[in-house]
Image (cartoon, rainbow, N blue to C red; front, side, top):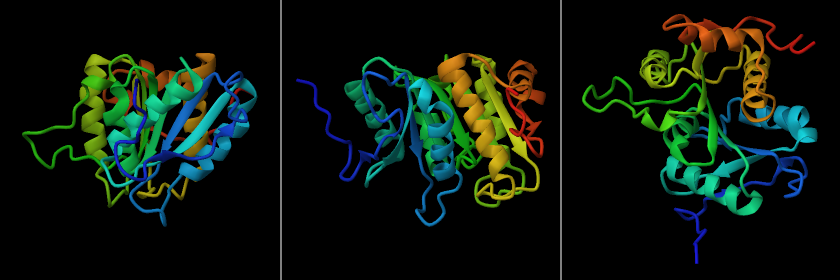
Amino acid sequence: MAQHAPPARGARLGRAAGANGSVSTVSGVVLLLPGASRFAPGPVRPLARALARAGGAQGLVAHAVAHGAGPREEAAGWAAEEVVRRYGDVPVCLAGFGAGGRAALLAAGHGAVNSVVALAPCLTEGVDAGSPEPVKQLAGRQVLIVHGTNDARSDPEASFRLAARAKKANRSTCRFEVHSDGHGLREHRSEVVSLAVDFVLGAMLSGRYSRPVVDALAAPPPLGLRMPLASGFGRSLRG
């Protein structure tokens, strides 16, 4: 019998937000992976609410993931497996902030994962030149990375280097820069959330993206990996 125990004490899925958590109506699940501090959740909570509003009627469900005492990427992998157990064969998006953003990227190899959103990911890229972050697991996934150019906690150039390596094997990779914003992405929170929602809905439900995302995915490096996030993004999407 398959075991569904979490990889570490305390790992669990939070309450479903979106399509009422009904198995019969769920068409996709977003797993939200928070940062290292519960006192600085970044854009994860507003993103959960925005996803429920924008995609709930179409069967999209969001769950926060509590990682417990073990590695976040292991908890993310367990959570993806738990989604399969609860909801069946539905696409999964891993969306994380900070340390959760790194976990989302690392856990993307799970078979149910079709997309990844990494917001200000805390990466080791460049810290140890002999051990760059892996990107092989991102093949075949839709990947969005968003980083503030003034991030003093996680190096934005590290996420650019990772995106550049990922793009070589996976054209469905894009990265947006939020000019003048810091690690918490507070100054342009509404634009960041709107971008993430647009990407998730396109990757999981409609197959359509806003023009900036289409351009970022199509542009060769470095253009599509240094795409500026425009002020006011999201105010007239799909309108």
